[in-house]
Image (spheres, rainbow, N blue to C red):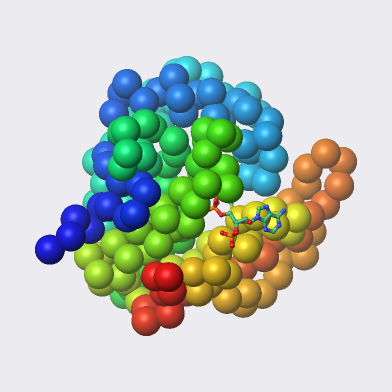
Length: 179
Ligand SMILES: CC(C)(COP(=O)(O)OP(=O)(O)OC[C@H]1O[C@@H](n2cnc3c(N)ncnc32)[C@H](O)[C@@H]1OP(=O)(O)O)[C@@H](O)C(=O)NCCC(=O)NCCS
C-alpha cells in the first residue's frame, strides 16, 4: 500500500516549529502572496502562533507542510479546512512558497496528493476553493486535476487599488484526475 501522504514529487507531513523561518519568508514575499488575501506584514510571533494552532492535522483542519520526496526540502504548505461532517466537504488552500520550484509540477502533485487524501482518508464528498481572477497558473492547475468553475464572486477582493473577482471552484469525489 502506497503512503497516502506521498505523491510522485512531494510528501505531506505535519508542520514543525523549525518550519517557521520559511513560512515567515513566504507570507512576507509579495510575489508569493500576490494572489492571496494576505495584505499586512506578518510577524514571527504570528507565524509561530499559526504553526502551533495548526500543527496537529485532523478532520477539522488537515493542515500540512509540503516537502520534496527527493531531498526532504520544505517548499510549501496546504490544507483542507472548514470541514463539515454533515456535508462531507472541505475548503482547500495551497502555497508553494519556494519560487524556484514554481512550474516544476510540485503544485499539481501537492493538489493531487491532498485531494486524494481528502477523498480516500477523510471520506470527503466535495472539495472547494476560491482563486482570484488573474491567478492563471493556479486556475490551470486546478482545472487540470478536475476542478470545475462553479461561480464568480464579483469584486470580492481589493488589491493594488482595484477590485478583483474571486472564482469559486469545486471537485466532487470521483472527479479527481490523477494523470
Ligand atoms: C499556484 C501554485 C500552487 C502552482 O504550483 P506550481 O508548482 O507552480 O504548479 P505546477 O508546476 O504543478 O503547474 C503549473 C502549471 O501552470 C501552467 N502555467 C504557468 N503559468 C501560467 C499562466 N500564466 N497561465 C496559465 N497556465 C500557466 C504551467 O505550464 C503548468 O501547467 P502544465 O503542467 O499543464 O504545463 C504555486 O505557483 C503557488 O503556490 N503560487 C503562489 C500562491 C498561490 O497563488 N496559491 C494559490 C491560491 S488560490
